[in-house]
Image (cartoon, rainbow, N blue to C red; front, side):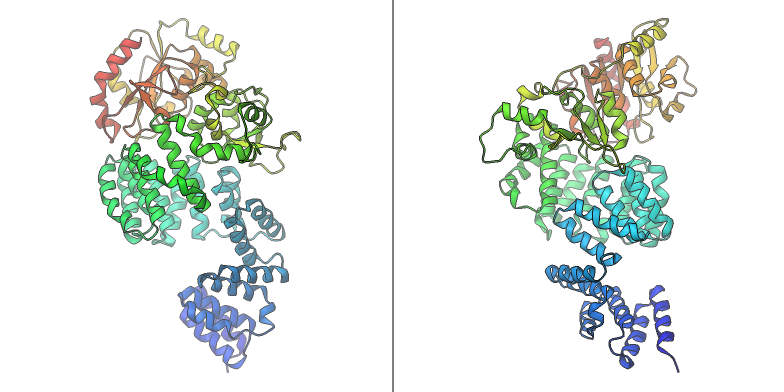
Length: 619
């Protein structure tokens, strides 16, 4: 005769192997002879949920006894069933009951964290999960904390904690995916690849995994591989807008943005979620090089933006902001940024305020680097951070990885917000303002339409050292920059179209991309002497001219007011908006835009003539 424990163990084995129907049969046989058996009832609900039979899971709940209703595991499962039945209020009540019985129950805490996150109480989410984490190193809790940090741009702690979770559950697909996503966001695409592949192999149909591996493959130049994953994602999930967005972006990188737009347009019209589809269509127009159509489509939505859910509202304003910047319409930015700025400065919407109120509030505020702000975007924004009437010692808060870049622009008081027990802001700082909201300030306060140039500080001793080192070589000193990935503009590609010039060519690249110099004579390898960002800044100030693709070197040249030419893709980031081929944000730089989307190797021959004429006229 089989005892209850024998049946329980057999059910556990079947569930662990994914045979949930068999597990359910065994668990029901236990409940037939022992109604209300807590573990059997809990296991049965889990099995029914795993199969996707919500009705059977609800029926199993009816077998609950007063004892099981005091079990936090049972209450948590009941909450999950309520959520699947679209009863969120009932689900949250059940979770609260579970936590009242056991404040550190892992699954109940994870569900409670989801409810708190939806309401925007992210600090409470962090506190709750860290309290549970302090009691036991559970991989689910670590995964949720790491996901929270990752979603807010705190990549350092997200990576550390996700790797800790992976050590506890190395086969978990979701944790492998998160580690890969964080590494990809940090730009370490090669290291990210095996983690993303592991996640995909364990769950080949998971759309998030497909999108992540497609995006990472595109970043490493594996465009056919990226396209294969992106096409699979949007084919399997034709109503999933992130899958379509991934597909459209990769098609755009391959020079097929217009085709992708035509393919998506009828999908957008018939989409279930019209708002999300409209935002995706607006992004597609931008990627196809038609930001004016993006504005035409999305600007009417601003009137009801306050009624949108927070993520959709943030997505709308982000797309509009980029479209305004892409088209040089800086005067339109306050329409989408002024209210948040006023709120950040604790000025009531109903109050009458003037420039003096804004200046006073802004002077006493700390600045926070927006999580979504890239290094290059930060370099553009840095021109405004010394304005208005702010000292260079005003606190700047952001990820620890951004500290050297902040110091490069003279911000000595930098507070890392992704390090445990980090230095807190000064006690007299009670207001914090995101860096991008500086754009909402009136031009008279932020320093003009595009701020003051030059604004890249330089140490005179380092500048003099570079000038002395280069003095034995004929001028002009022409700095060269290139991309690391073969998908970008390599040194060989740049040299193939660079005209014969008098003077001296100087490599301004200091990372491992310097290996591309192998075999090239006559180029001064200045990069091997760059020890920190201030060395690089001084080198850029010393050079007479700089040429290369979008990257830190060209942004530093623009910030230093060093003449140069930026070679950029046909669909370019907003900060390369130009008027009459002169960069709006960096007046010292000419912009040569690729004639169409595509690989640099096929585009450079068509750009060679314009590049030669422009360099010779500038020099």
